[in-house]
Image (tube, rainbow, N blue to C red; front, top):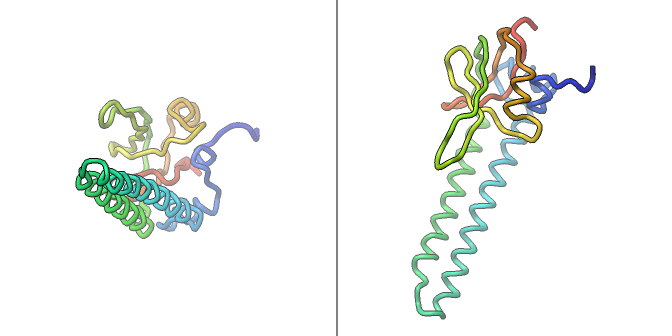
Length: 166
């Protein structure tokens, strides 16, 4: 059945990605996605910073309140560089395997936000939200069987998942 989702299709992975994860590393496609995400975050912060700086320069002619927007703009650009650096550093992290029964849940984070989490053998891992890969889809795909879940990072993020019997 070609239309039935699997853990690999929900994560938009193929067998090459899974083989690289089994070997303890990210595939070229996964590393490219991570770089792209870091670049998008850095660009958003830089744009915000430049807008704040431009607003501060404009406000200089409008009463002299330029210091705060310019300072916030510089801080936004610095935050963007830090985010890009930390995301880029994740590319070099080893991928490790957790094995066990999995459970997915939505947890509250921050001020009213939510995140999708997967618990594997008692360890909580972040699960990327994508269109068509929310809580209902994961709960429909995952069975009560044990899985190999490949994660990376200090605060584990799921990079791949496959049935342990496979």
